[in-house]
Amino acid sequence: MKNIEIIESKNTIDYNYAINFMESKISQVKNNFCKEIIWFLEHPSIYTSGRGNPIKQDKINKIPIYNTNRGGKLTWHGPGQRIIYFIINLKKRGLDVRRFVNNIEQFIISSLSNLDIKAYKKKNIVGIWALDKNKSEAKIGSLGLRVSKGIIYHGLSINVTCALSNFNNIDPCGIKNSKVTSIKSLKNITNKKIVDEILKKNLNIIFS
Image 1: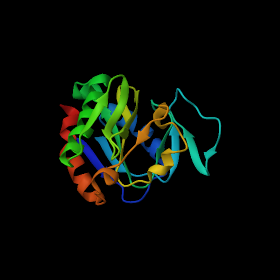
Image 2 (image 1 turned 90 degrees about the vertical axis):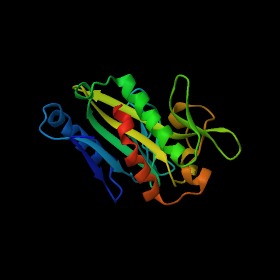
Image 3 (image 1 turned 60 degrees about the vertical axis):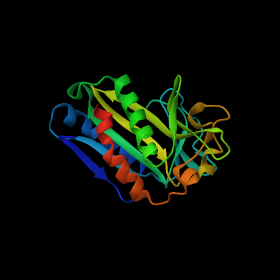
């Protein structure tokens, strides 16, 4: 984790502010003018959609929609969901995009395992799944990334204590009839500090 700055935001972060911040750091990271960054944060309640799936309407049930330049499709972000954004120089780290994505998925799986949650990947679908209390497959972690000038940014989300009803208005990540779950729903863990400590402990997996 050498030369990586870990940022932890206690308050919710406006989505546009977060995107502008990351994009302002791309050239600086590429040219070694600043450290690479891993950013722990939460957004206020919003929907975001990836560059290949723009949404024409402005809101869903009064919740704003942002069309963004990351990969992936429509999803929800909000309080109780851990967002981790990356601003990482892939070449410097000896990683390609596929390896980086695989490592992030393994990072989520390993971290959830530390919470006694058996999570897994599904073939040809980016993201992390677990069995909910009804033994149905449900998504617990999502990824959406973009590469610019050899720097990968945007990141991942993990449902911790968030209100899962916010996903009912959409097909999460464009997957029809998919279900979602959370750490709280599966293990009744509501202390986000415990979750964050496990995530921070496992960050080295991303760079293996």
